Length: 174
Length: 104
Figure: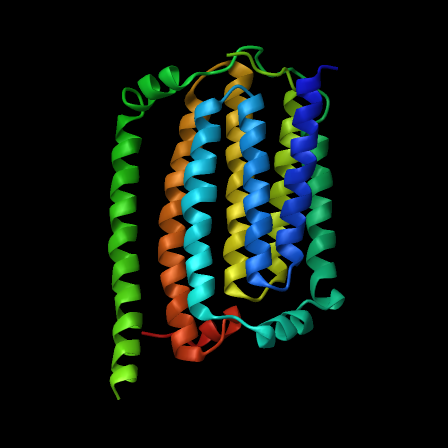
């Protein structure tokens, strides 16, 4: 067992543990920090699987942009001790134990479907060049559709957020 | 560029665990922000499965699917966080159940 294989399993353990901590935290800011850790661990796994470009995108866009967006909103909402107390009330065992058991059953079924054909992943990675060529030849239509989706999201987020800001400004003036 | 020959089913195992953690989070949490974070975890698990499958066959398609997931996640987060601001503004609460009163 090579040292890189051990690295992979360590990264996998970190990703799973951090994800579990994200779901169980009471404070949104703490959960976001664990989310960053989980995303970085997944980026390490991408790199070890021979996908350095995906790893870079994971760090730059997910950990760098999406989580920062979350952080901005959490800071704008100014969630304090009051919300932590409320989260504690909402997270009682009778609320989460049912979904957790049902999800565990699904997990066992999925593992049963996967187990039995252990094939190793390829020993040579897929570089950014191959990804770029495929992205702008075979998947050009998908790139265009993603661009349209992002434009729609931009307009939608602007529309929804603008009303929030203008309401607040009127409130301040009054 | 060399990659580690991790058994594919181990990667799928990790992806399934991550997906289920996110899934339980979506079912259990009531705070919208935590719901969105759980969705991010689930989408990352999907991306991990795609990248692992791409590495298994030595094809770039898996990474391209991951990039499309990335674009989807960015769009989803932008719109959803704007909706979170509206929810907080109108109901002074981040409880997802208050949104059941939405109409028109």
